[in-house]
Amino acid sequence: MIVRKSADELNLMREAGLIVAETIEAIKKEIKPGVTTEYLDNIAEEYMRGKQAIPAFKGYHGFPASICVSINEAVVHGIPSKQCLKEGQIVSIDIGVKHKGYYGDAAFTVPVGKVSAEAECLIKTTQEALMAGVRQCCVGQRLYDISHAIQKVSESAGFSVVREYVGHGIGRTMHEDPQIPNFGASGRGPLLEEGMVFALEPMVNIGGHEVEVLEDNWSVVTVDRRLSAHFEHTVAVTLSGPRILTSL
Image 1: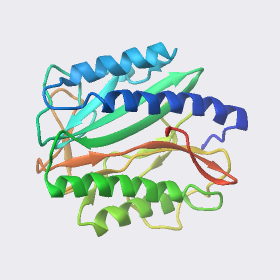
Image 2: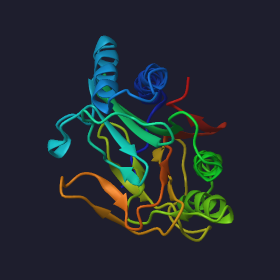
Image 3: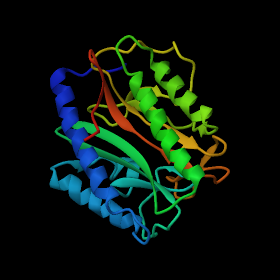
């Protein structure tokens, strides 16, 4: 069942989403060659807790850190460590918070220093795919209109979309119904109604869409070890159109 949120609940989710957005900005300033992913995790946790928010990922099914940091071929769920970022890499960071009983969730990918033109195109396309999905979050649209929009932008640029991992509903729990694939035929799925809130998160690969989980039981990487990018926003369906809850 898709839970619809009231106006008051959306305002509380916006508070959580704003903390996510501010945490992202705090992290972005520190991303450069030589910085450890563990350091980025520490910055994020300190900022969230300073805003009286709880890092949503820490301890979730045993995840050991406050943010997910995925480098190059890592798609999602990378564990922060003492590994240093290097010039030419791309890094995807996923952040979730719990604040006043509600969750916010967002992700972004950025280059570390100068990267290849292909990597830049991947990052740009994945962000565009996310925004194409966001534009479908309107009353009267169908759920798979979101999926189709994401897939169309990604594949039109020559990339592939990850199929094993999906977007999701969000609210009082981090993962609610429905699941939102990043591929599919438009005109299908539940009708979108006012108050529905979704975490849209395209994961887009330069090579094939196939992925696998590493021995740490968390890190998801592309099977062909080619680059992957990840963007995410928490978005509410309102009568006046999509409302991004995790932007500044």
